[in-house]
Image (cartoon, rainbow, N blue to C red; front, side, top):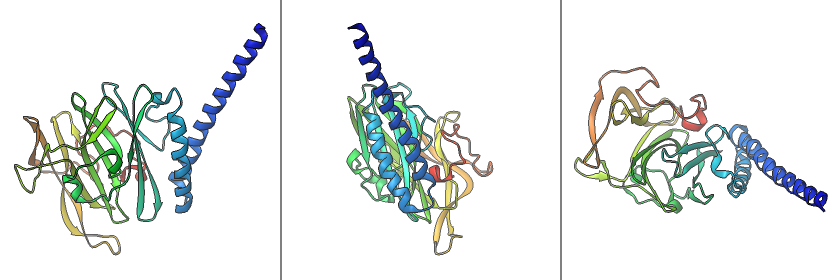
Length: 286
């Protein structure tokens, strides 16, 4: 009888291990294809299969153990208090169109999905956003703001001519997720406030937006308009080598017009170490 029970346990454990290994194998394979395939339709197909495999992975008991670098095609950010992990990724399925996927994963195995159902425009700075009407972004940095509230920094490849960086506030409590809050001063209309900060810029430029712990400020490149260098682009925004940002004052992030008046060189604005390898241009547009 003991032999039969031991055999059953061994077979069961082998089945579980095989199932988990297969899911992980699918994530690696489909993730590589959705990121690197030359044909856009192959990226799109692989993206759908990767999404299905990731949903299967979320139903496994060790899903919350996912760490940065485990799956190189996704960004994994963990809140400093360990209350959740923010997972996001990008699929470029047409020459000028990308789709984004996002999940808030909790230690108990539950999760909230962020669904890419909104056009990424400058108006998002003032709009209400829910997980079901998410604008889509690949997040690269997170900072706790206060209890249950966090700043999250993301990237969106709008089209072949234009990229965007976004700074949002995410509120996570008791399994409920909300996005945005009117705490960012509008630099074009001082003493009014936006739900989030949106920076749109040329597709061939590199723009920094992050929290600088040394200055205790949100810092980003100052953008100026010029004619684009890409064929058919028209006027666009590019960094001029100076920096501006926001300082937290009485619960609001107040705009500061000039922080630095000289350039530190391309991609060298003072900022925290990037989450992922900066060589992955199709992840963060750098």
